[in-house]
Image (cartoon, rainbow, N blue to C red; front, side, top):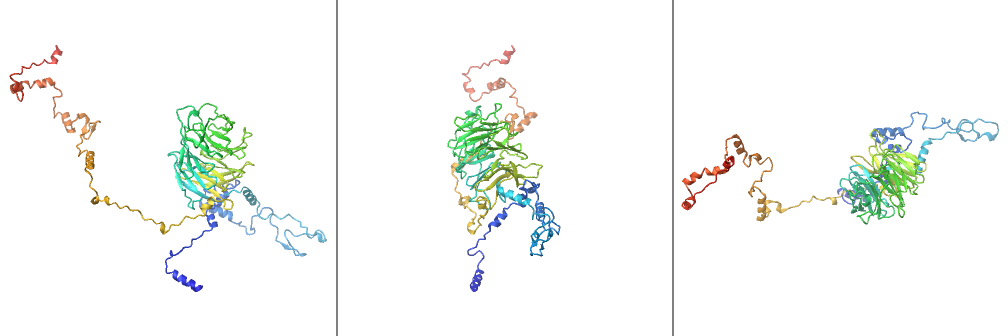
Length: 624
């Protein structure tokens, strides 16, 4: 066998290295997930009790320094580990009676009996190791938040303001302020994380919301335009809803919205119904099978008549309630019962001091979450709506699409924060406990970008968060290889296909024999005539009349003469008296010459022509 191997190696050495079947190098999953693992500074930033919330914005050297501090041992040579409690007791001493090892101070006999040999006097042994870390680990494990690894779906030039993941978790839609929508497919995507399609619904209008249908075969796109669009699963346009007449005052009489849309959402159960809200101050329910008119127009309740924009809207889980956030700070809820109208069933006046950016129902329909520009998140109990259950402040929000999301079991709810100029915290994801109504964790997403949209997919068990600024945007996907399924795990483990010789394509060269003058056909005379007619010199095209003060060397004030003639006339070198003379007098001055020396026709009629009698001058009559 060794001789055969030597012979094979000797023959193999005569051929190039690329000859024959090549073995593909397999990268272990552990190495792949280690490449996408979040840094230790982000992990330290997760706990709400830590004071190092700005760690993601530190430099690499500062992060390495902090990591070395966390992993370093105490400098005291006598202590190997940090202990909590009294100092460690003396080393173990073997018992002289039965050979057992005793830990703690030496035993002092209380009597001469054998029963008193096992009695120990002194303080109890301290716990081995810190207990606070174990408590934090138990707290984190109790919620099981998948955030150990992270990938970023890039491609946008501005902040990502809209996000939608279909129910199976295979396709992701992201919309941005750069007016485009990008479509990602986890099943067909490799580790390069590139989108397979890019759409631009309306040129010059920001994408504000995206929503999948219940069957995930179509999706709704809401932009700053007054018309919403419907696309199929592959990104092909199915239609757009009609725009209303902006000159009709009553919004119920218009066929559609007349101002830019603010939000839109597909019905959670019915695949033909969608809901939209607009800056014109109305909510409308549409049927996707009829793009020409809406099914229902909802006008919110206002303290004063006018048009106040509806900033956001949402369905409940069963599609029986509609909630809308009004520009005056109120929250209004409508129950879709038979005979319902525009009058809201639940009206929360002045719920926020600024515009509301997101509203979210819980699954049981008892809890309503609201997010606003005023930097707060409020929890409302729909059975007692006078006062919110809890108000969470210090959540900066600078984008009208900042939303709220529930965890799959609805024990937690989360929202994103925007960055501020003087702050070094960066964009965060804040997790709150629904039952305790307290902050659980803060996860740093980006040190320089704000977090706008977020969602926790129930099937994938992965957290999606959109972030960006004026020059870049992306979707951060947080996952845990031990807790998450499919989604990011599929595409990260799929390496891009290497280029082979078969992929080489020579540049296409087009040989046109008629490109050279030698092989050109003689042009027809008709084309030559048309070409000559277009040439003003060859066609002797007359000069156009002057339309301005001067053109082509001619001055308008010269009355048609050239510039040289005009200057000579103005200088007195050329005198034209005919413009100042009387035409009658100019003709009569040649009367004597014509009578004495007749020419041409006059001599033939000299004998028969009567003597001409000329009328007197009009000027003489006027003087008389």
